[in-house]
Image (cartoon, rainbow, N blue to C red; front, side):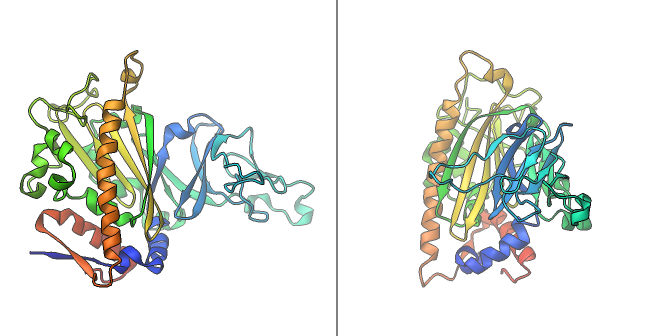
Length: 376
């Protein structure tokens, strides 16, 4: 039986995208980076979550904190994200000294977000420092990844923790040493498609036989009955003699320590709503962060993570995995852009999910529940 997809407006409408921003991106735990991006006290990183600029910092005590990138005085960005008068791009990562100083009037905040000084102003001028801390953003970590919640009071009121959002994925991936891994390469893709198109594509392998011939040589089960019999919980088996995602299906790298027998020869993948896709081989991880820009444009950062023991070897070379993934990714993004262009046609109202695409039905449920609309 064919199930209907979301309507075309869910992929094309700026108004619906604005509702998704308010009800999904700003009210769910949103994957935004790796702890190694802000490794030392004073380090900071600026990220854009659906148009909201967020400042992530490491405090003197080593804790991670996040704030809206907004001074409490006049609203100036604490770290400027626009180009300067020379047209130079801003530095969106760096290190603070002892505090966060606004570039406009030099109001200065501690790394914990408290207002420390406001030049020439004191309580006699109506300054109450305890009421003028930076606007907080929720932050929590899992497996070396950090996630942001832009409405932390709402999350606390609902008891909506990162762990509750991760669900069973954290258990299924417990053997992988994710927190120990380090990024060695990133590819950033600019894609002319709605963010949900990429999630739906990730959630099925009905397309794999036609779109990914090289991948199917390494994982023949991807082309069997449209991928309808894949066991994602146990992991996906490779071709005989293959055990990782490279052109040969092999690598000189050792498997991660701590994996069970299946995980040393099979591939796992998880989609963690709303914007994180993680694919795990025995020797490397490809982590995809989706940054929805508008109804028809999405940026995707694909990070390649490896174990420090392998990185330290003189002959370490990640290109076999990076090049293979870049090929597979390019195939996916091209077909996703084709979907987006096709949905603009005046004759298209909605599509259908085939039975082997049943996991993509979860996107229809997820969006429908949060937008409060009938998405069937």
